[in-house]
Image 1 (cartoon, one colour):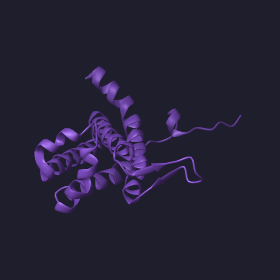
Image 2 (spheres, helix red, strand yellow; image 1 turned 45 degrees about the vertical axis):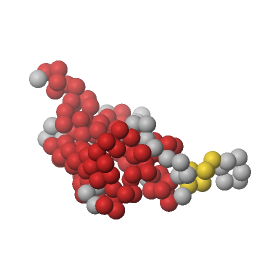
Image 3 (cartoon, helix red, strand yellow; image 1 turned 135 degrees about the horizontal axis):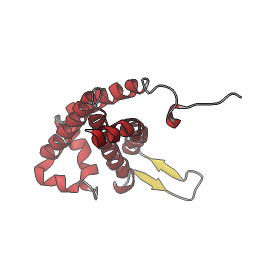
Length: 161
């Protein structure tokens, strides 16, 4: 009888996930670099100020809140790189990525004017900021996949280490 194995069920190789890891490293480095520009700091201010999760960053001022996020994104990239050698660091970096993109995805709902909900023929319409945020659902899912792929080995290492 022929069976069907998919990686998510533990069969096959997780090696192709390395592509996702290195793509996320490039994304976090590039996002982190952008946070050190005035244009990016101004662009994300509306999202930060309306977020119930990170509005507290405003205590650092416009540039400071962007710098904090940039440093966090560099740290996530570094953990993902180190995660190539350590499942524990991979799980930590991936989890931090999950948190990052979950918060970013929440902006879709917390930033006024990003989405217009209606009962018309177009029940959900978004502006350019909404389009900018909508792609983060894919990045969130990539980080979840990396986290779940890293977790089993991480748990085993922590218990035996």
